[in-house]
Amino acid sequence: SGTGKTVTVTQRIEYDRQSRPGQDPTFTQLFVARSVRLCRYVEGTVSEDTRTSFCTYGRLISDVESCLPPGRHVKIFNPSQRMDFSRFKQEFHNLSAKSERVSALISWMVIRTFLKGSLEAFQSPNGLLPMDAFVKAEQLGKNRCRIPPELREHLYAEFLRYQAYLADKKLWDDCDRVRHLALRIKESMELDPDAFSQVQRSKVYVDEVQDYTQLELLLFFYLAGPNGLFLAGDPAQSVVEGTDFRFEEVRSVGHFVGSVIQKPKTVNINFRSHSGILNCAGGVLDLMFSHFPNSAKQLKKDFGLFQGSRPGALLGATVD
Image (cartoon, rainbow, N blue to C red; front, top):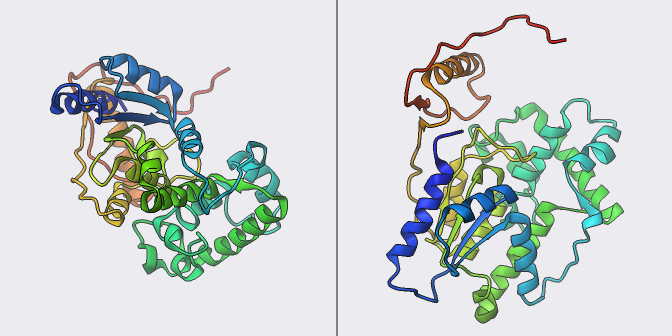
């Protein structure tokens, strides 16, 4: 946080504009973020240009759905029937007799990130990751999926009960909607290029990319083409429940669509905090990683522009 990732996105938007000769009407840009506030900030930072649009991820999904022809994949997603994490926890997980072994957040993360939101799940005929691909640790790799092998059969059994619950209550989750939209986009690309051109953009910029699953990233690749996507994010700052992000998964999606992905560039000069705070925080992280090496993604340490005052730590303090 504070290393200038969003500023880098705004500079890239301006750079790409200047790289196009004149006011090329065929050149279009789209900035996407989950936060309305972030969209407004970026829109207010870059210079005005009618070829550039800014929208939240939720608005983008709705806009693309309304622009594409129904095709063979027609399904209505009623907002009142949406299953989010809060509803999952209250209506399903807390009432499951076998939910005590794993927290609701871990179960939700497994469903969103691997069982329904992964590229392997999208490639499966029913949109679900096969049991063997999840239970066998070597299939996903120990660095990608850190769920202990002894819990995976239990989690997959819970997932099957969850899918049955969705079908019985006629509910849907975000993975269902995004997969359906990805199939519609793919169909339009192949059968109705004119319709697809209405939603395609020359360049797509996504901030806070750590909050997106592989399936959601696939949408961005489809809309931007193989080499028109610019991503910025921090895998240690995910705020959306159920997302376990690694930049390595972006490369997998890029390979799937035939894109050549550049090696991610790291920004670790912090403009928000001084070195006193950063060094203190880095010391805490060093202790955490020494005892729990796989608890989070290990990144390069941030450096401040100036030393600043020495921070203090309170032990056993109480607040009235």
